[in-house]
Length: 69
Image (tube, rainbow, N blue to C red; front, top):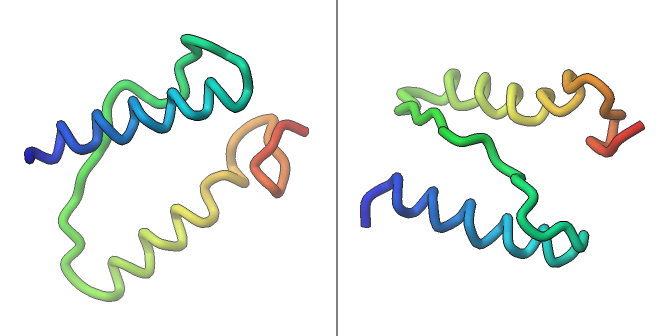
């Protein structure tokens, strides 16, 4: 299966479950596109890992836990 189809299916299934959980039918939960990148070494992996872990703290209006303040 092609990567874009796997990502699309993941987004569809998780959005459906999130909307069921929060009773928000039809609400968008994902960005339209995604960015893929080949990780070439452990240093790059660690940098990207830190970015993913730290990024939610940078979202305006969200607290430490990633939930609305």
